[in-house]
Length: 295
Image (spheres, helix red, strand yellow):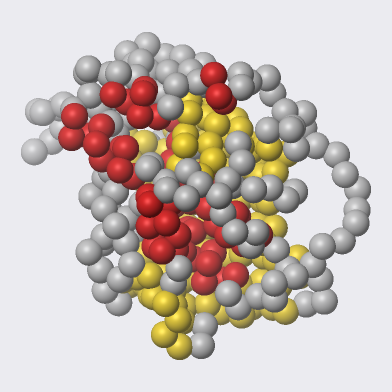
């Protein structure tokens, strides 16, 4: 296991300070606020620790309410909404400086047999044939070296490989609002199913709005031609998977309007099983030119 992955696992290992109350810490991100995937993953850890082990997570729905402060701890309070015979529901509120910054509802289900069908896996190249994230990032002379190092540090625990050029690698002209990324953790994980769901939740917030940027020829936060943040995030966990084995993140954007952009995606195992569906809306704004608005 890489040291970066161990550091991430330590970050997600919350301290229990009271029954149903947990405390997490943060680390610096590419932008000057807590990375949304971190808050979502930590909230899911808090919820999962109040649920029997035989009930894996099957969905989460979350809202990002305020920017998180990387320099302050985050307190997660779990509300045990329902414990049924098949389903368990939890609500988690993340608080900093006395104010809620994030809200999550998660549902867990005892395994049962049922109907089974899925959308087929789209075509995609073998991830082993694609450049690593570091190879891509260090190959772009137009990127600020400081930004490159921040990206590499933020993603060091994950082997994340774009199938095509990422928004910050090729921009200026609109492209199809579709992006594919292969990812897996940089090291093996324990067999705890919750851990794999939590790691996938963490990674899912890294690239989902890329397709919004592609549709408008924008490079994104790495080049400063948009500003934005996640607004909400929803995930459905359909089938078992491992986050330390290759997963295909197939992403697209059906709409952008009113300063918001929508991304939706499916995550497949390398052998073609549909593991996760993800939907996220975010603020995506074009910075105003100096003097273009009222003073």
